[in-house]
Image (cartoon, rainbow, N blue to C red):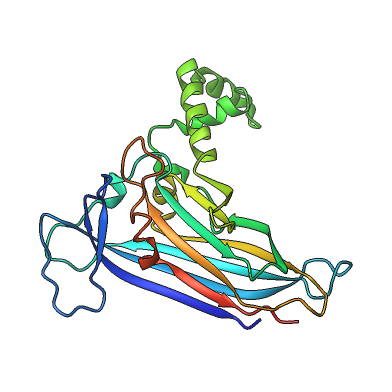
Length: 268
């Protein structure tokens, strides 16, 4: 398989972004744009890259190659005269961003296995931006008030109050829950994976995100097996409506407008 790249950059006019009537209108390709001060605007960038990564297992079949994918998703404000939309502040606290990957398996003679998926570039933690935590107290609570430097142990232990421990636990849990990975199956029998992130990710690493995943296709080795291309779709979504984790922008019927897509040939 050759290295392939598909990238999409769209300027969007957003209406009713935090309701069930949410919608987008593509402004990309238009000439002069007349921005409405009563509406919100965003730039969405999505890219999907593919490259061969090796064999899944030499002991099974020689035709079982792993394909490696990298994706990037970024949001910015357009160069508008009207006020800039504070989209980060408008995001809900949980399930704020969803990056959805759909895999269309090429026919009945082939099966798909997602062998690995991850978020990339998430070190080190930008913890010092969080001013709500006393970091000396946090360190004391983590190690029970004991410091490698004896003269600090007593001070750290004194700072480790019940409130400090609760703040440290709350902060630690927030870090752990910043992003999650899920597998799912569509109504058409297609496999997919979801990267679900909270808005804390944006305060830690900015508004340009990156992830990766590996896909292996197990094919029937018989001579009658039919080779056909498969498709990988990347659908980025933003969650604004509070207390409704299934409500994302764009809506399902408009998601195709902002997707990145690759068509990969499976060759013997």
